[in-house]
Length: 179
Image 1: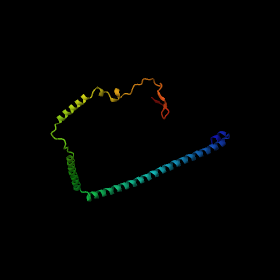
Image 2: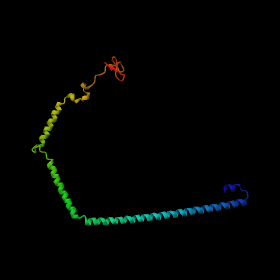
Image 3: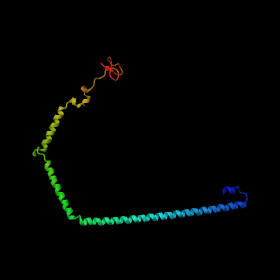
Image 4: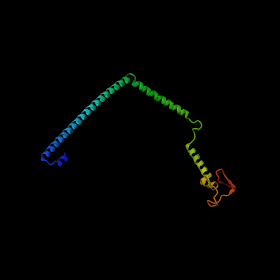
């Protein structure tokens, strides 16, 4: 309608175009209001449905909890007696004590006499350590891989120099064989 208003020269025609534009804007606003109302109604319906589903789930949960509570009470009342449980726990404790005694008896060391003094053992250990330190010489203080006897011979030639070949012999890879 803007373009028509700009191009129309007749004032009566302009008024007519403005009137139509106003009616179109009114209809547009009316449709927008109806759309917003419908969206609000849909939201309310969705909320109500969600509330109903939630309430049904809560009712089912409470019913399940009641049934579990009744079943648990029945089992405890009929099948489990606190005196039986206490008796069972006492029996288990006695059996574990007996088992511990059996393990101690089996673990007893018959080869070591009971009259060995701990101080005597420590003194003997110290003496053995001193003997061991005395046996280790200067040669042993250097790791074996750094000792002169374990080192390869030092090269005397220059790198890349000629390698003596035994009468032009080569190995299976075509490399010269040393003499």
